[in-house]
Length: 298
Image (tube, rainbow, N blue to C red; front, side, top):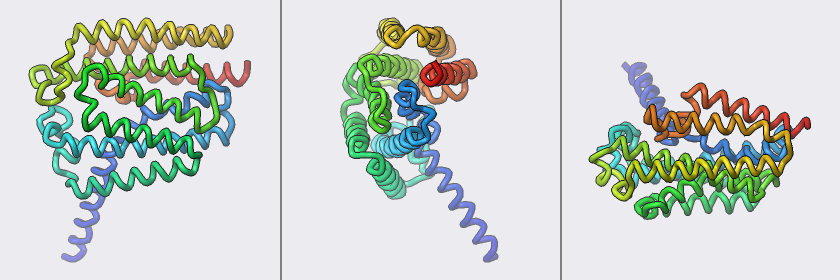
């Protein structure tokens, strides 16, 4: 009897740990791979010291992102319980109660800050700016049309900038503009997916959706797609002939993602598109390998 109780406690503890990891949304950490962009494009990706700093920046940003996810789930717990997908999240489903979730967010916040301090003070400031910006988003800015999308995009830009700060790497105008263009593209795709998913429930789930329409988001995505391609092409032109060979990969990746958004109603979770769509995943891998080769061996 005593042995069974011990086994049950261990199983319960195991399930709690799994729920905590789920709440931290480890899958969404793939968004933070943008911190490696500077190291890749500056040609220093093969340097072990640079790679370590970039990895630490990735971890710091990932734990801080988890902190924001937890705060957001606590704030929106009632709305999430009515959402067709979010109701299965640990906090919304009741698998993790509010006190435990608060302890978890304090843990992830301290880990993020600790790692950032170990890199340099500039990374710490960037990570804290990300925290304040997203906290403001969770509490208020997500209800303001257009601003909500721009805050999401700014988060991606800040990831890339943090990576550059961490490794003292590439931080040019073209680098920032390309990141901004890609970020807006992904953010608009996310809003479009939410609008179609929630349909008549959009006002109760996310108030800002009542100010959007599928037609408007399609037009904005068309504009930003052209701008993004122009930004990246100009960047490649400024870097020399070799980088021009990466443009077809970028074009295919953008067009494939555009296809998934419009034909398969994807785009709500960019990290899942990256992991689940083989075409996108292979394109990103080949693109990264080609950039590393060009930047290090040409």
